[in-house]
Image (cartoon, rainbow, N blue to C red; front, side, top):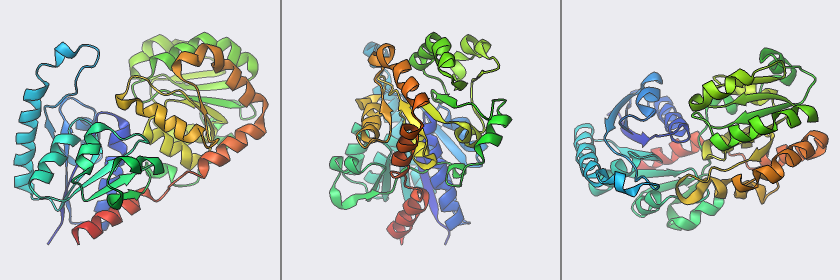
Length: 361
């Protein structure tokens, strides 16, 4: 009898990429399996999941507007409807297990599965677990974490340190650096600084880059800068011989390989990739995310000497100073790269799929 799985996760690439990695891992293990996604209507999973070859049903669910709570009057009604819709999907598909990787739709999908007695797996990507996952973890059959210190939020006997599933390109050795620099239109002999602000972009990172661009070029860096789709019109015009600005980077493996150091937000998925590639990184956590989890993620690395952490409020004081130090001190760059690579968990997808297989056996 063929297996059936439901996976729920989305809102950002940080939730979608792990969900797709797990789906592909389960498909490789169970070629006849039916794998269906539950996502949030209007979010990026509604296009990313079908593009990867999987079916998805969207439910009308949204988070609370923290800045303007009065605008969230409809959230309870959407939640009730989402729970009803999830129940309908689960009854129709009769999954062997439901896996949640975070995002708006993940909560109602897993909650309803638990009420119906269907085994659930929570994949917690962050060092500091979110409120929803903590509640779901109490009744989940297994919780897969990416950081050892995340186990304090869950029943210990259910926790498995697996790491975050990442795109397959980053589990293989990176291509040659000098060739990648040429491919990107950069000087193969000059140190390259890679700037990442997530798929949509990071306003504070972009503003700091624009302000400090002359100083960074004076230091000797050449720059490959992903500004995000929301900020394309503002920053792509800054492209020059030594500065390449793109709204989005399709070939991340080439960009990572070309980098000598990077500046990045501290989303869980990105950090898991950075651990695998082993490059010096300056992390600027977004302060606008739930439970301030990016700061906890970044601190988990910086405390091990595996990254440089700069809070947004310290950017003006420290940004150019830290990058000058990384430019001048190649040994420090190498040491940061070696330390972050020690934290890599490259078999995350396989380990999670093995866990699910044991769960439904």
